[in-house]
Image 1 (cartoon, rainbow, N blue to C red):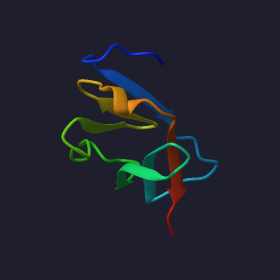
Image 2: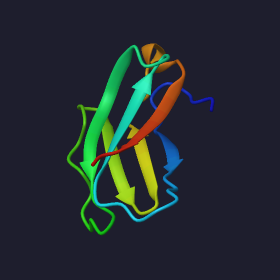
Image 3: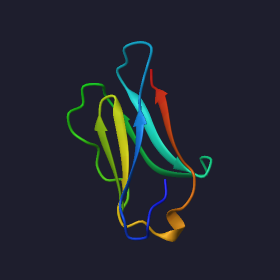
Image 4: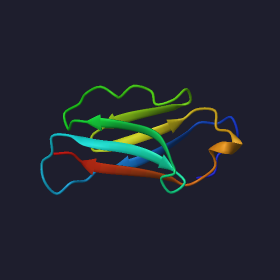
Length: 89
């Protein structure tokens, strides 16, 4: 995704699992996992969105979709972003 400095961008992640789950950990990482931008634990029936991750980042959860929104993009925001999901037991 290409974004002009100052714009907002939303990155989506669709969470698909093969069996029912009670709790999962969702992380957004930048540049091959060297930097965790946002991490939270989610329940499948959660109706509210998690708290903001950082001043310009916000995570939204609308099962089965998680969205990381970045407000006022800057040059140092460039990189590779990855949504990592782990089922917790």
